Image 1 (cartoon, one colour):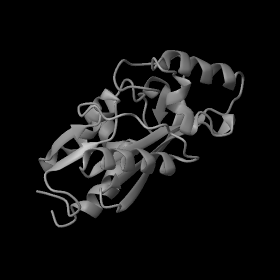
Image 2: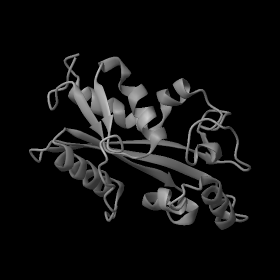
Image 3: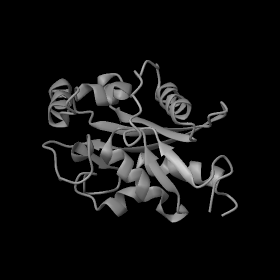
Length: 200
C-alpha cells in the first residue's frame, strides 16, 4: 500500500527517537519502509521559522533535498496561553541541547507561578516534502490542562505535565496506544492519511 506522492519508503525528518518511534507506530498499518534523518546522517537544519508550519516545511525540505526521498517532518510544541503562547515553537529549545525536559517543565511551572489559568494545548504540523518541490501540510491540536508535579514515565517531552481534556491521566501516564488515538500528532496524521491514502 503506497501513497500517491511516494513509493514504499518515507523519510522521517527527525533526530528525536521518541518522535520517530511514535510516527512509526502511527504508520504501521501502511507497511512503509520508514527511515529517519538520523539513520542517514542528515544534518538538523536550524529552525528559523516563525511558526510551527514554517519550521516543519523547513525540516521536510532540507531532508528531501539531502536524501532524494519524500520526507515527512513534524514540528510540534506546547502552547500555554497564560505564558503568551510560550514555549510554543521554542518547546524543544527550552529543554536545551541535552533535551532536559524536567528543567523545561520546571520553568513552565515557575513562570506560571500562582496563575489560576492552567490551560494548554499541543500543536503538531506535519509537512510532506517531495524532492521535486511539492509540499503539503497538515495541522492537529489537542487541548487540556497542566498539572504539577509531573506524572508518568511514558511518552516524552512535556507529556508528564499535560492532562488532555476529559481524561484523568497525563500523556506521561497514558498507554501509548491510547495516547495515539487522541494526540495532536494523531489528529495531524488523520489528515495526512486521509489525503495520502484515501483510496486505501
